Image (cartoon, rainbow, N blue to C red; front, top):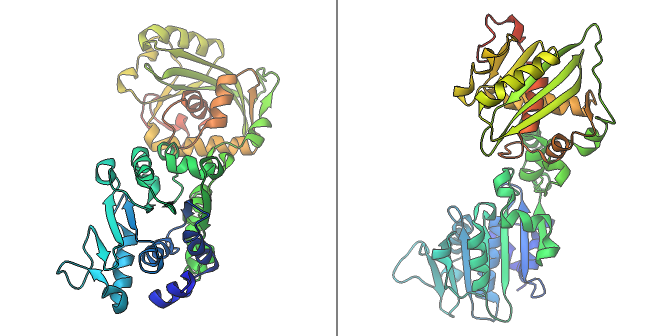
Length: 413
């Protein structure tokens, strides 16, 4: 029986076109390594479970199969359900006296093939020789676990399968699963993907609701099952950013202009960065940006105050953290300083900066290489190399309620 016929017989379902391609690849001896970037609830766990049973029941090779997952094994849950719906298959399970379900750590059938279920740690997976292995929720699996499982494979026809959803979080994007997804050919993997839009059980109404509530990046990864490009992952488009860069920038001094500043505090390893911009209606001209590495606030406060005075800054928006930095600068200047709680306002600040760049209403001198480099690489949730961007975002920030309407310039908004 071929794999498609086996799937229809054991699940009583008809696979989608994407599922058929995936199922056929799972039994193709010419595809030793596969990676899937899958949307949620698209049937990849069901297909993997059915292929696992096909391997141990229909393949003439007596084999060991490993199912590993960072969470509860949804693949193995499907294996259990399929076996209990197919008495002819379940009758061949050596269940060691357990009836009504398959053992939690795996099972063996009478012809000798076995399925092993393990958590996603090297300790649980090391030393287990197998011919086929499927790693589910691979975006959550540590690199060393993936490498350990790959090292367990031996035999004439091995199969190594990584399944998951491309991670949005920057830390996970540095993981092995995400790196392979971005360049599968380099690592010797064949890439498969599923989209919820191609699955009839996902209604147009539910898809429309997800599109409204998710960011474009989330929708692309979690609903379409696609791997975002570098341009998708970066918050600021390089094309739009190029339109904001000029040979030089000078103060315009228009009657309607005003100069504002943003300060992102830092000591070690981050830098304290001061950014000065000129606001002309909805436009912003970046006049100056300066960073101080590993300098305490007491040492740099007088220099910051002088720069503010030289540019005739009318107000300063400073990061409220660390708390001990507050009111240090006020000893050297009378310019109003407003402290912004970044964790409460950062999304709004970055969104406003992103909009300015998209509308080409921000002007930056081409010589500001550190800032431009950080802007090109910036992603939400970034934890390093973001201080220049954060200072610019603070300088340009225009909260819904104007800062000047507040009773005191030292209020935390």
